[in-house]
Image 1 (tube, helix red, strand yellow):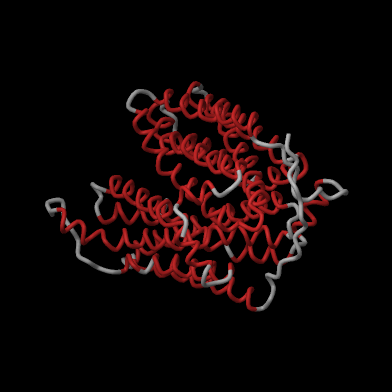
Image 2 (cartoon, rainbow, N blue to C red):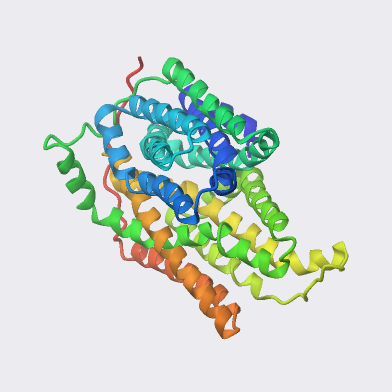
Length: 426
């Protein structure tokens, strides 16, 4: 197998630029966002409901507008939509550090969220087009850069936060500004992949919604997103349950391990799976592995106390970290094949719009899944049966994997032919 550096160099310049762009986007985003709630509550003295509003507006503007962003990318071309998103994110992040009124913060949050809705589908559709038959390899490499940015960003943000939150916002905004200039100068102009439908935007949406194999796949994959999001919900809650006074440190370590698994193992995992299975089978096995990860916290290794030594804490936390490793391995196995499958099911037409609707479905699924997971967690605590949460999550993985397997076996995920399209360089 090629080394990661050799693999990266094997892609064309445009693909490499998109991968580096994603690393920069995630680095800048995670420099700021993990610390925004504390800044709003403690730094600005905002009430909890106001903090929730600002954060919720960003999430809604991104998840709810993915379809719009994807449609614009297919109709206007990938580059202008990507650049517009980067400009909006620059302005949004700059505002977050220098305004204090609730209306201004809501506007900044809206700009930040809509920016993501613009460039996320466009970047993935652009990368799929540039990679051609190497889509799976390209998305595997893309995920390495994606995860590396998630790992580096919070560390940089934490270092800058020792000086001032405004410095964090300014640095993040400057990264997006620099990225905007670079993309304007270096990213080739690229039309959408489809030559959008003649009937207008509604015709585009009708085409995507009428794509039954794609919709079935999107719905079947919701469970995988609910599981992957537990690195932000159930697993940190478990870390605080095991060691209330060490919960934050353990949670930070969980994020580091999760990112390290993807960065170090993504390319090898993808190559190994691709040599053995079809894309859909790799997805099924990956989701099954993700679900299996949530059986590990059921293992009782004893409870360390505040006075326990490192060895006792290592044994106590081992199942939790093992769960994160398995979850990371499963996610890494699924991601590139999943992204490739979306393009295949789109038949190479309206790819960004398909990605937009796919992300919207996933986002809604995550929201409902988090509400359900939280409700199950609380109910399990009241019943004195904390293991119920892990059984429910493991069952979610089994159900999701079973749905994809059943759809594949029944032939309902048959992709249409993909047209051959070329980029238009500027």
